[in-house]
Image (cartoon, rainbow, N blue to C red; front, side):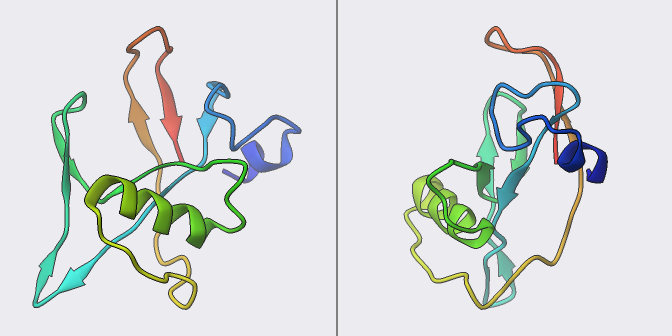
Length: 102
């Protein structure tokens, strides 16, 4: 991830496929349950999240926007911060090559 950030590429761009690009997710915990969404293309249950838009002022703002877009849940995530970093492969689909979401 550091190599991607330092490479001079566009690490937030959806068209940055080698090795991939940064994305965000939001974990919502309530009453001992975790809110998940089913990703149809990957056929997996995931935390709400997605691509970072250039208009997003912070990573937390991007995560809050994605959370609202995917679930309708609105919230202020500015006090939470980053608590997990991972990388997961995205298979080739819809004209895009296989790549990694960081």
